[in-house]
Image (cartoon, rainbow, N blue to C red; front, side, top):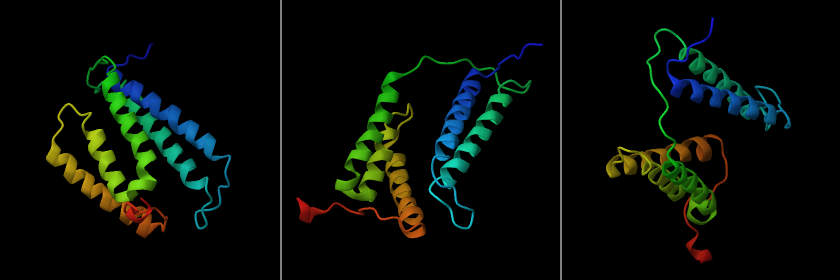
Length: 155
């Protein structure tokens, strides 16, 4: 009996998640794992990769079930991919100059412009909320050291 893929978008997205998750988990094994109490640099990426692979497997299998919604693949949109990849590359370049707050805000707004239903108000609010989340999670929660604001004295 052949497997019939009803939702091709979900199927191929799930396959992509599995591949990326497995690659991340394998790559993380090159680092010290540590334990749950004293995590090494490979611990979090390894388990994140495993979770992504499991999620991908669930999505892939669900795309073949009888309840799956029939959906085909749309044509790949290079403009959207360019906007998203460009926004991420720009954020990586600007982080040390603009600080984490402005960089995160610009990343969110930049990526939001790739949406077919782009809304400035939603993009700005999301950018502000995500900047606050990044500060809470990474700076306050994990104690990572990032420049928070632009260093105007260095210019």
